[in-house]
Amino acid sequence: MDKTILDKINRFTRRKLSEDEVYVFSVILCDNDIDRDCERFSDGALEALRQRFIGKTGIFDHDPSTVNQNARIFHTELITDEERKNACGEPYKYLKAMAYMVRTDENKNLIAEIDGGIKKEVSISCSAAKRICSVCGNDKNVTSCAHVKGRSYGGRLCHTVLDDITDAYEWSFVAVPAQVNAGVTKKYSEEDTVKAAVSCISEADDELRRDIRRLAYFAGGRAAADIASLSAAGLTTKQLIALRRSFEEQCGRGRAEVQLAPDAEETDPTEGFSMR
Ligand SMILES: [Zn+2]
Image (tube, rainbow, N blue to C red; front, side):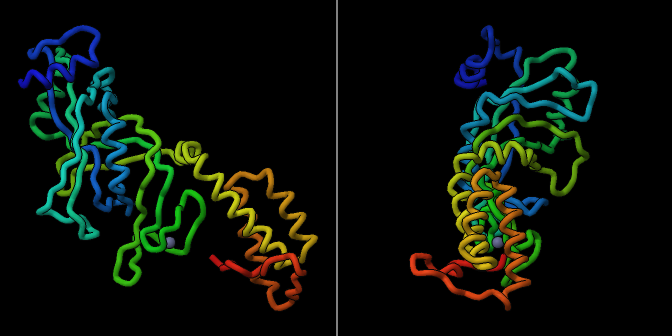
């Protein structure tokens, strides 16, 4: 074993381990291809994950006999395979990690399985503050758009691009039988995503509040706009989106009756207004 590998490992251990004590293996954590959830990581996301996964512990789940057995990533690298293209036609990029386990009697079988290539599926857990629609660039963490992932628009598959990684939590080996597309899955909790995205959201919230005011004006004039602004002040993003939607519906229904009579200092209330 390369001495630099052992040095890297020993940065994470309480005592210096010898070459015989550790088992080193590599995994592909994720890549830039569109996965079965019709999502993919942006290049920036892959680089952020590369940095954040160093030192992270991996677990072997779905198998009670592997409880308390874990591995730790001590090295990561982004690799571009120019020969292979992802579904977008870009060179295939993947995040490879090297991990180690301290050899014990208990993990002997597990190590044999990894060596035999049986445990192939890796799942990672992370937070993405942005989830961009590949068709229109809308951030789905903030607001919705009309595009449905998995559908084709102008011959291009609509998918979600995960971007702005704010945290990486853990990775796990999922014991699955060998399959054609054995590879990477990922999971993240929406709540984490939302929490981590607070700073990006405040700007988007302002935009939502402007939309709400505009729509309220559209529906009920200046007084309605003032009331809507007041009530929108303390709302969360989700509530803002819901409120905007209800105003959009109201405007959609009542548009014929709405009399547009903006007063002088009000900017055009329909400016930027669109039904989404
Ligand atoms: Zn879209």
